[in-house]
Image (cartoon, rainbow, N blue to C red; front, side):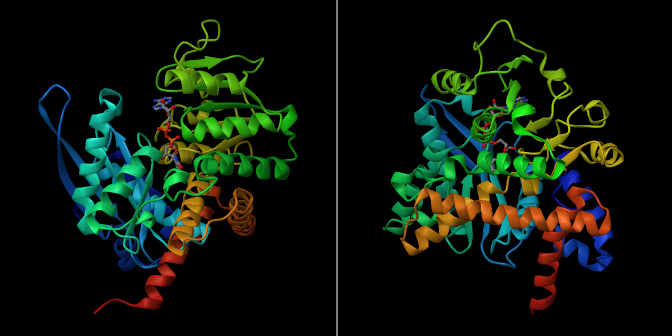
Length: 420
Ligand code: NAD
């Protein structure tokens, strides 16, 4: 089938789906219905720049399927954003939500923009205009947005405010990942990173590894990478390598994670943290370590990097960090490298987003401990189901995780039937 969905990231999502569909023996005639997005919206967002000129940015929203409930997914502001990338991310969200047992289909959106080049006022204008253009296509029971790369709690507050102004009342259930002061939930900010660390500790238990004797390398030091680093370090893991888009550091003695976090908070990035431990970012991922956490962008582990990885656990905190070619290599190295696949590894974010949506709909707010206890419960359940499937069928962790998600959506589509 020819379609508007093209590009390397979409091809990755399609290839992964094909492997899983083959494993599940899904008839060929049913595959397009499961894979292709229900809707894709493309918009132009004009805003006034501080210099008096007008700039137009391209924005997208892809809603993958509406079979289990509203769609749910982040909004990415980044130069790489295009319809292929956004649709792949929406598809992964579907399998992730289904694996975690959430009543959602996947969605993703974004704007092709370098946020570092915008002033705060320009970012607010772009955020508000993006949401305003999306109003006909979203809603608390239609499609619920959340943050992703390049967006944050403040952007979600602007989204919520813009939507609410048009409705004439406060609708805080329209987006998740908001500040707690605007209907956000306790625990959302740190949920993804804490979830990544929780699943790493579950994996270490299974592999009989001790956190206090282990080392970790983390690529990406934004929301996910920094909270994962804090939690790993809190349990005694030595963080020996970190990077972001501005800097890369490596030191076998380990870093003071709190000092890194303080530096990044004060300066907006890791740049200038150290002169002695500066390291080549292209070599960071292949340094020996117990735990490798890619927490930045997709496709960083390709067929050249995969054979050179020297980690015991690969915790895919980012979405799509491993290409299908690399996956084939890692499949051969299954006994050496224990992968926590992305749709499981970073699902803490959407799980707590779901809790936020539920609390907003009910206007009944939970204590942070309740949020995090329930988060751990859902993560444990998903982890155990993935491991049970791996043990039963001797398949890769990725195929097992995706199979649970794809199977759930396929069954729901089969029982609902095809309208009309
Ligand atoms: P963020 O914008 O807060 O941080 C991204 C980090 O990656 C920054 O430190 C940035 O400097 C760094 N980075 C960008 N390009 C890089 C490169 N080439 N090399 C090294 N570092 C680079 O974003 P985030 O919310 O932390 O998201 C990170 C990843 O996790 C993304 O893949 C995102 O889709 C995924 N994710 C995020 C959430 C969430 O709740 N935030 C949930 C699920 C998945």
